[in-house]
Image 1 (tube, rainbow, N blue to C red):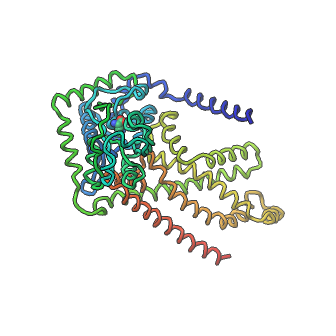
Image 2: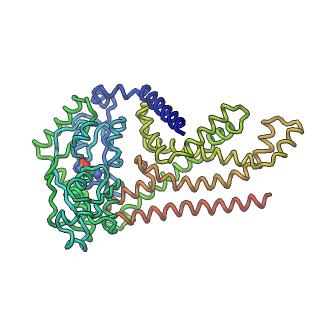
Image 3: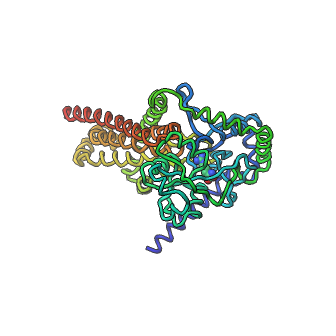
Length: 487
Ligand code: ARG
């Protein structure tokens, strides 16, 4: 046992050092990123758009647009340097990884410089200063007033934020519940899963406006006081840093942050209309993308799966072994991990700049191909051995036997199972939301942020997934019935 563990560890070591060796970016990191950005002509700014008034999405004539103080700042950085701006919306806790692997050039996401973060990135001069607040349910407001009242209580925070740190250091024995996105924490608070939430002042105000059941904990004041917010850039990029600080100086000289705040407040004003007129298009886009990635996943997955299945059935041992290893690895690791591997791996290891949508599709295709390979193999194996013996003794070659005797029968076993796989993929595809593919789940999260309503978008997402899978399985039953008839 010990021996096997050692062997596995050694393999992991060898593979990862090989990967970092061929990683072109690993060497490029030492070079000023400014040159790269200039050559590309596009500035990719990473942020987590769950953070009004800093960054959020809102509806403009039925189209979703980014707005907020950080967005305005990002626009100014781009404009000052004659670059096109690309906003990359992702989870807050993925931002540092993304900048290190070269997925994004900057983080402008209400980020506070901390010693830990400074090990990974460099920070510009500050452009704002903020204070943390505690919010509670109105019904608890009388019991939970100052910091001591929160001792031993469940406290919600956004994962890997300064707020998480604060709850750990300033509240006695707090039971901290970290969630990836701000609306999720708000939802925990509203449903009573946590008693308080540590949240940045202006963000708190934005949410309190839309959630009348929440309020500030009256006397909570954190010792840390006010902290600054800055832009994060890759290390060792003095030229890029100069450009950033030049823009920030200009912003300060002209007092532009106040203007940015005003335009953020304007964008936050609820546009009229009901939930569906306002956010319907988010869900429609989500449905389109979910269907698209699922179809691509299953179709290309079938093509590759068929190849893998044939390899696994082949007479040559190495091929069989390779196919098995491929299938076992993909079925034995979570899709979530595979999605991240493809997303970060394509840039960090291969140095490619591929969109999240394509990365999501690649991950799904690879994952599907393993499951479908097994479906196809099982389908072929299920055909009675006598069939191929009979065919071969009639003088058909292996290929002919496969093509005209085995496969036509195997198809009947395979098709229903493929249909099931399709249903699974529609549901599983929600996982690619973590890298920012705007399918149903991702857009539901966007609507959570835009509407400050954490619950309704989830219900809508659930219903949409159900409609898709239910319709699909009805269609499958119909065809299965017809296939039985043809027997
Ligand atoms: N200021 C906090 C930090 O630096 C939280 C920032 C969260 N930003 C966001 N866009 N969700 O850790």
